Length: 64
Image 1 (cartoon, rainbow, N blue to C red):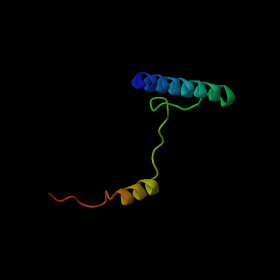
Image 2 (image 1 turned 90 degrees about the vertical axis):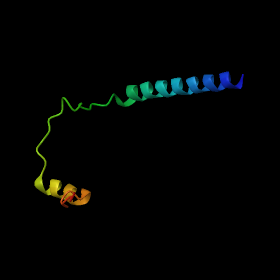
Image 3 (image 1 turned 180 degrees about the vertical axis):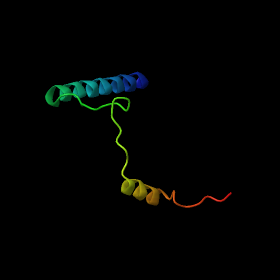
Image 4 (image 1 turned 60 degrees about the vertical axis):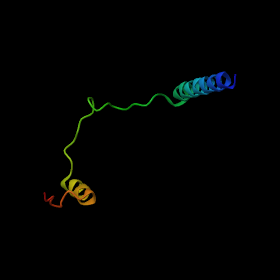
């Protein structure tokens, strides 16, 4: 019996969460994001690429 109560409480919790998200969308509106297929990709800056390469460590040689 306690399993049934737990499953019911979990379903009610997620239903309340879904209603809360819909309510927030009504207040502030949905997100206006572009998917990766719709977004235009600019060429990365060389400085930014160098900083990422330094942080990641891609400037090191890999010896096998």
